[in-house]
Image (spheres, one colour):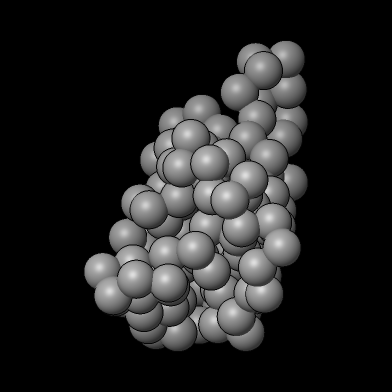
Length: 110
């Protein structure tokens, strides 16, 4: 998934739109983890920051992406329920921790 034309910034590879929609429906009442809230909060901040910088360039193209933090949290929480998903979430969280406040590094995390 790309954010704005030409930027080539990727969201986490496990957060695809269809997957998010299915997981949101299946875990709407599930309690979210603090780790998921933290990762998704950081990702939302960086996506918002990057979107603001490219809004003028993307105006009129219809190619603007809106990040839904609640869908991110729902998908992350659902992934944590099984061992393979939990490994993916931990790898993603560790990458975010290494990226600290660098949005380019954070958005490049797998």
